[in-house]
Image (cartoon, rainbow, N blue to C red; front, side, top):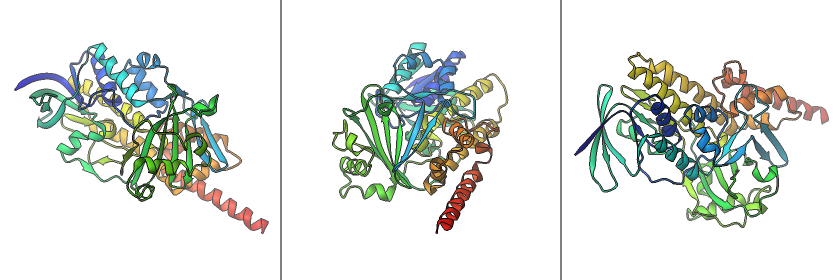
Length: 419
């Protein structure tokens, strides 16, 4: 059996793994990345948020990504019947990037993987982790290559960026139920032949069909558009009698007064993919000799496009802490890693929960708009969820529900006065 030795083994070559690998390689640390699949590969998570750009830049991946001319995302639009709420990332409370991208993830991830290979990172595709044995912080990982041969990789630290593959959570029994209600999704791409000219044709939109049911529309610069429906799992299952994902997604699109003409009769470019009960959580985000990053630790919900941002945030933070640890510094992983990441996750989790209660939608569509409130919510949606100057971050547990309650009370009083 072949044996290799590295400083850091990274499992998974998605955004989190590539950010970690690129940063560590820049620091002169010997890294190896193993990826179970072959790139390009289809994956969900095609809408980014501005915070992620900081990490692509620091990891040295921004020039290669910029060269792809992906569709730029300057904000997001939420539609509910005749009501429209548009967030502009240039009008947010927190300083930071004012734009990001809408991307076909097959192309996006492929570019990053190829870029870290160009930089000199050892990245091995079609390599599946079958076992991991820890000896303190050191580890021995068994990997099966495409020919079915096995080898071991010795590492001083492991970063698990395996996404929904969840390698270490499975092997180390770290999975735990998510605190979010079960929701599922179906999505596909279409050739967007009915795309309108100008901003209308390129703007990412979320069309609310019912309080807990919404359609996403993510236009790409290649003329294709991603269309998906998200809803409680029971609702998703009832969209088709025989679990036909094409039939189900078409049924959802036809419920949209705004988008049924644009997409209702278009063929899907691949059989729509169904993601069932997608929210994930773990008992711990780290342990002696390893850290979980991206979707291998927590995945909330696609409604605010936080997935890739949290993946890159955790990937970069883990890489920086590992560098310090390898240099002999004592790291408090509980505070510096899990504590930090949990703060951001909890903020977003509140906004996801309040989206599905309808409270956040009440704030979004309230007229007249409160520009200051909107700026602060916009910062959260842009991913700046560690800004303690923003009360919509620090008071996230109560501020949305309290404001929604006041708006509802005001509405009821107006209705009474009219009567």
